[in-house]
Image 1: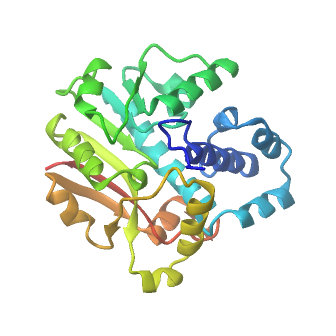
Image 2: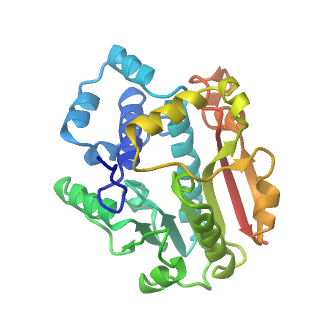
Image 3: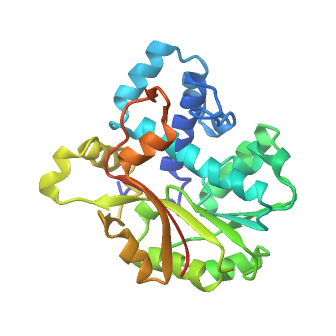
Length: 298
């Protein structure tokens, strides 16, 4: 049987992300390590019940079934993108665009802090339709300043879809591109970055996560790398990873596409920045292949 892609069914990796966020909220329940109180609403019944009744021993058992460092990475990633989103709201950024929104809940978790920012959620229609249904069942209303627009990133023009959604190319914008780049063809990554470069205010910012390309002979030396690759092949055959950039090459990669890198985090830096306090690490290490980056039009 051929594995179905996200064009035929809602994204399985998006559900996996929601599950880990919900689990982190169950385990920690604080603004830093487990802030997503709404993630549970996007889980199928069996996962929702698992999170609801999870105890310390249950959480530990679940974490052992997740690729090494992925639970920690999801906590760091949530904190990273939450911080950028909240800064944009605080500064009155006119537009926030979620490129591949999945089951992102920031527009709803932080609705009381939004004074004037318009939020546009872009995603494949299958995932977006399921998200609408989940929000409705949870009795979470979609605010008037949130627009949902469906898109196939591998086939459709981002500027054209954004225009229909009411996007203003002359307004300062924060683009959050979370958990998406891995699954796109390189040409689609280029098209996304070109849309940001050519159709945005010079002070706009794009933030995204990506995988570092590592030689095959070194994969076994990178924390959680082999487990992550095997897990993706087994659990999500319809969502193949396609895009990666060599370690240390992201700055020049962006420069060639008319963007200037602003900040960059490797696995150790993200653990130190988002998963530690003055007393040291709050969790274990992050999967070693994964990175964060922010960039603006050059």
